[in-house]
Image 1 (tube, one colour):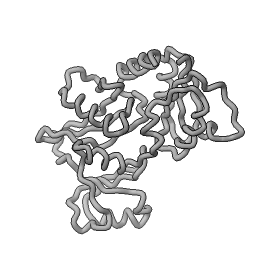
Image 2: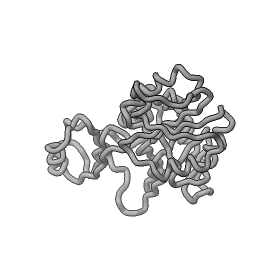
Image 3: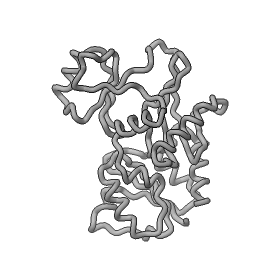
Image 4: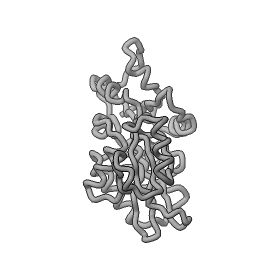
Length: 244
């Protein structure tokens, strides 16, 4: 492939991530807004022989954009994952089904049996996340927001500052952590399992908590990694593009 197209969204700001990806790319690189891509009146340079990377996985326009790109000979990173348009809760349930440790999911309609504190998460990437400490606060929250757009997740941390949280970048079976090279190899195996469980996801970042018992829990998977916290990960990703 000769070209690299980064698909961003006008509703999100990826300024620094996009700048670095474009500046360091070894291919001819162009940034395109997904809103323009799906606009039938918009015209673009040819997508033939292009690698496509969506930095806007939370946009409902992604499946439409992929369908529009089908007429071109291009390579869409994470395509099989993206066309299924997973919500965050879908992802957590898939991981759990594949024996990957995730925090317990609570049923919102049964808040009387919830052990607080918990996290209340909007069921979309880059959505609202708040930590709630009692059912009164939770009920007040849902007086303001649509309850159907959220899910509840246990807090696996005890807030005693002894837990460890990692943001891990995954690129074709290799992982990268900010300023960490000597990491527990279990992290790499966990990320490989995440990739397989999510339609062989090629590139992503994942937030992981290790509790005081040494157990790892996946708390978020982002298939639109900008590599903001890992220069090595970004460079490896861009180098791999030249081999597609």
